[in-house]
Length: 95
Image (tube, rainbow, N blue to C red):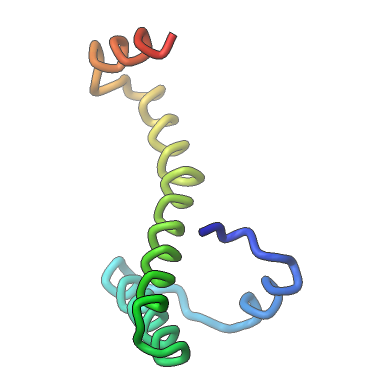
């Protein structure tokens, strides 16, 4: 599931005020409330549960790909790789 929805749809969802969460617990609370509202609106059924799982797994994957991965690569280059020979072996297997 991709977050890249049509521009017209984005405008509908971006025009709201939301205080940024203060910490990870508050972020988790907001995510759970959003899931709950989605289920309340669409009904508790397997399809809805699957959509919630897919959306949040997709969001986490997108976060890993676009934010966490590139950030970790920068830190790896700045501070040196932790995995050493293991990474070299894997890179050799990919050739």
